[in-house]
Image (cartoon, rainbow, N blue to C red; front, top):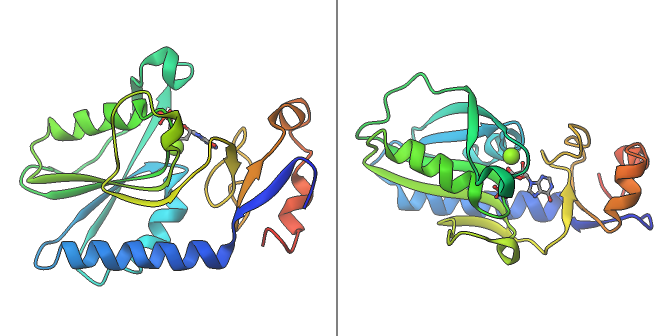
Length: 194
Ligand code: IMP
Ligand code: MG
């Protein structure tokens, strides 16, 4: 595609996998009404596709966080910029994340949610970059086991851009992208990434 980036998961592959995840979740939660809690902004696109494959009554809520430096520096502690406006006690909560990398952010968020007394708490991540895990954490539901590469597209950003690439694209040379953040703009109209 380019020397800097290549498609890791195409649009159709993502669609199929997300539908499978949705059906699995629906099967596991029959008779219950799950509460999906999604972390803005990366998880929003995944959530939108995921819940349309869940044929159960469910709720969708959002949180927004900001990091203090990178995950390792902050040990995953984040500032909550937007909090939930519902009571989680007794509810079946599923934390939806775009990607679990070191696991520090998710571990922190899970502890915040657990403290609110849900009946159950599970995690669903589209991408599991398990090779980078610092803390033991395995999402109950994971779309793809992602290689240890920087990825963009389908909600994932580089400096807030590229979330609108329909595919998930692996950046083979992050230095080039850091030096010239515009270098992958041609992907937005590249049929291989669409
Ligand atoms: P963790 O605390 O290291 O697991 O960080 C998870 C967060 O880092 C994700 O929610 C993303 O916002 C971000 N992140 C980690 N890897 C990538 C990537 O390859 N592309 C884009 N964002 C990433
Ligand atoms: Mg994120």
